[in-house]
Length: 239
Image (cartoon, rainbow, N blue to C red; front, side, top):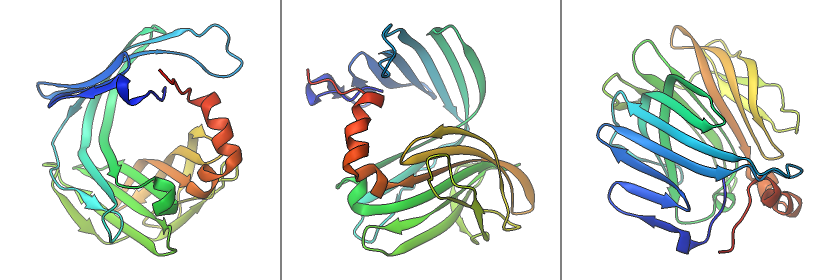
């Protein structure tokens, strides 16, 4: 990921162009064309990262959800369940499997609206379930569980009991929801000073499930030290 100036960003009804990479709806699939370079710190070779990702929704959900009373932050789970096809040219790897597609938008920075949040998503035998909870910037808390049917239509569900998880290696507090009040971290995919994304084994609404879970600490994100470190992880181009 590279942060780019506004002059390098354009969009129309079906396409979003960010530098040399772009995201485009083609028929019934969202096609992501990646044209980047590996710019991590201490990696002098700047190898190309090039390929395509196709996300094919099983169903589309038209409903958005406000995460705060003022509706400054909106979450839209567009495809609760999807198929995904990854074909990378550089490095030469490919795979396919189950996927998911959502997006967030807002009228203020995330660090203004939230202190922490915990999110998880699991495919069920039919449909999917998303659990979302956290603490807003004003100290108020929120928590909800949403079940999506096979047709993608959402329905608010009874919130399962809270299940604490071990903190990440960077000390990020993690939490999820599970029918038995217990969940196990199978592996952690992303572990940073302010964000952790993991795979969990848990139980929801009578089913044993594999969940994708994330925890985000916006207080950490907004700290001067993390802001200083970010460009070394996610480069910023000025032109």
